[in-house]
Image 1 (cartoon, rainbow, N blue to C red):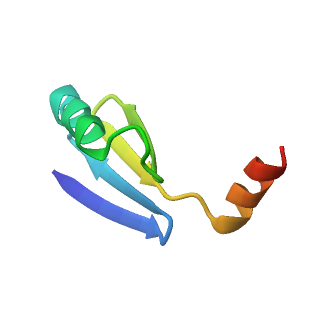
Image 2: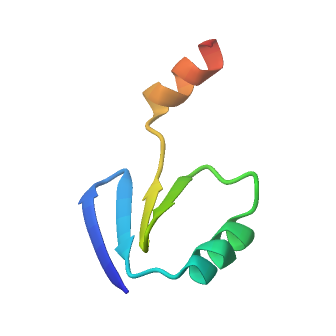
Length: 59
């Protein structure tokens, strides 16, 4: 597993199996604050910035 961090609100993980992704989703549960995206072994975990969350509430 290779971990890189480009910004304070995003972490990228490489060479993640589908099973590892499924396990992570199960461990985090449905009420997680982070957004998680998976594409062909690449996992991106993002934490929404507060200003984005306020827009979500308004909408």
